Amino acid sequence: MSGTTTGEVPKILLIGSGDLTIRLGHLLASAEPETRLVLASRSAERATRFANLTKLAAANLGRIREVEAVAMDMADVDRTAEQLRRIRPTIIFMGASIQAARAIMDLPEELFRRLDEAQLGPWLPMHLTLVHELMQAVRLAESRAVVVNGAYPDAVGPALAALDLAPDVGIGNIGNIVPGITWAAAEELGASPAEVEVKAVGHHYFSHHVHRFGEARGIPHLLDVRVAGAPATVDADAAYARLAGGLRRQGGKEGQQLTATSAARLLLALLSRTEQSLHAPAPGGMTGGYPVRVSREGVRLDLPPGTTPAAAEAVNRRCQLLDGIERVAANGTVQFTEERMAVMREMLGYHCTELKVADARSAATELAGRYDAFLRRHGLGA
Image (cartoon, rainbow, N blue to C red; front, side, top):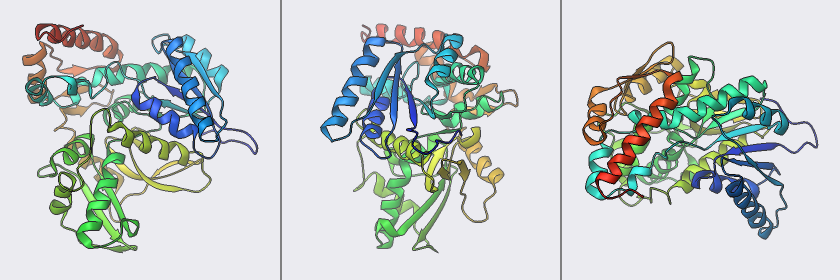
């Protein structure tokens, strides 16, 4: 990453004006160290209103922060590259997708239950498209910014890594589940959460499933627990059960607060001279999530003792099958599992056996149209 010089205030470009990015902006504006924020949205009006909201809310907390608003359209790669050259961000956070992963949660319960069986993998075009266009602009602008991706990083990262276009790291997912596992392990061991260190390796499916259902049977993942630095044996099944019991939490839009804090922690660590231990998906474009150490010098793996990067990624590649992704080929083409895609065909009339990165936008356009037609058929359209 391009480091900041003494006295230089880091500049963070936040792309997207959805719930996650707005929450993140508020966290960063009220945190130390001081940062200059640039909020980008397709709508200049929306960007302006939320930039001012962020600035004025921070002022209520005694923080005087610069928050700039810009209109930015990822589809116009050349224009985005020009804007990146002007803004010269230290960090770029990508918080935009064509459709939010949680969108189907607004469906009536039975429709949601049936469509949710497709899992997130088949919806990849909605998340890959804008990140692909952003990364093309980053390369064109010759930007040295660290790029942090909040759009299904577990799968987007490896698809783009094949084209040397992967963001540096992602947020959420594994970073969302580890705090709960830490508290659950502490309760199982009769220890303080402050004494417990958890290192987990897991794909999006693992983190999404465990917090909802309190179990991980048959889900490939790795877990290492230590108390005061010493290895500890914990009943993982009992710990996971606590996440759907006494440690159950709110999900959906309100649950985005956990994802926002995961993102804030990582972004602030990227500005720190001291390495911070945390969890993040897709470091360097790897599949799934890992324990990492993060500082202004970059992101590096911090795996459990005896675990190689290849072995850890192999676990996540097995887990991605449950999310509906068969494999990511050497050229970045994503192949989907027939079981998950069959749900999309039945419910939406959408079927995609494999997706080339270059075709992501056209696939997203088709998928969005199919989903809109599905909503109208069920009397849910606008």
